[in-house]
Length: 166
Image (cartoon, rainbow, N blue to C red; front, side):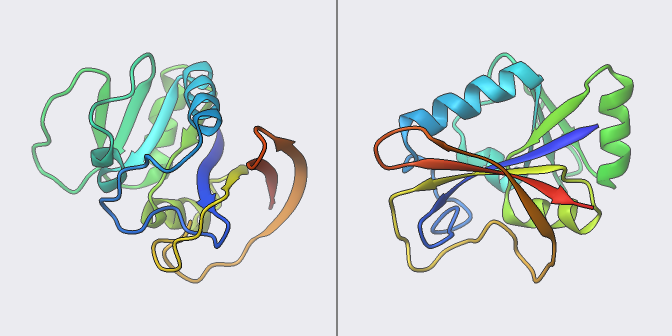
């Protein structure tokens, strides 16, 4: 199963000021690209903190949310999961999905990269600086990337698409 990590980052590499920072700082073009891509793929994967920054489940796609809660609330369009990402991805693949978008947060991104599960990383660079905040990953990791594409999506924002070299 192909996994694409899609994140909007500030010019200084931050994805949020804090774990509960509402993602209202990204451009409308980035939001549109994320919505179109996740709908096309059919699955968006989040950690529960990132998912809770949205006011509701993202419609027209399966929201797979990693949680530590024993009894998460039932919610239409949401599949609450826990455990090893490999098993969750196998279950999704067995359900007919060929790829998924990983939408954060930093901890889940780190877990997926560390296990070699991310195939591509798409970073929208937004014209903001937070100074302090959360990075794309939450721990020290190492990976080599190959640039696939650079796309200017508005006057000030670009999307860098990388392949993770395995």
